[in-house]
Length: 316
Image (tube, rainbow, N blue to C red):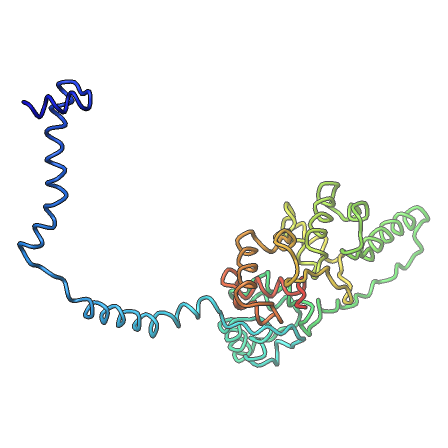
């Protein structure tokens, strides 16, 4: 009781607080000293650190020997890209793989030729199973085949009697309109929105989207890229494609991948935000990109995406 009275007088505790203090104080001392007492009584020591270290070293060695090569293979796909002209009827499998085709596609083309098949026009390549349309868009200008087969000339029988003037005029107007439509060709990289609206099926909305997408890209490297414009259906594209062209000498606006800012790279429609981050991190880790071959360090890009992107990149 004397101890409780001293505690109450010294700390100014109430009766309840004093009782709690008297219980907790011995308990704290017990908790502080019991672990040491337990170790001294049981005399247990752990001395197997060397054994654990050897086991961890063996696990690390196993990971390096077996796991790391497979990861590197995934991060660094085998892509050998050389955009050169090729003839799909005579090119070897190695030459086909050299322009961006994977081994399976090159093998299918070779087997197709071996079975007696042949390619007469550029678009015949798209009949190969699994041939990506995006890859065809990039390679189209390098395929050494005609865009289409020449149309056979059809002889029109001359009427035995001279038609009346009214009928001849109607016939002439219809023919002139058809010929004017067939001869109307637009350079897709030079045409403005008003000129684009002369195409059948292209109104102000579509023409505005085409011009905007062209500005984001830096120019079209292939007319097939028009299909990537929002809202352009395949049937609409097929109807206007014969009236579009890309000048062979045209060079799209290019981004210097080594000096461009994050914002400039991410602004390109072919590069996502995550892919932009990977490009910046790869430059920081490995240094400058010296050629298209260095793009194989990018794990978020497949070979088809890289081939599409190459016309828009500089490596200076």
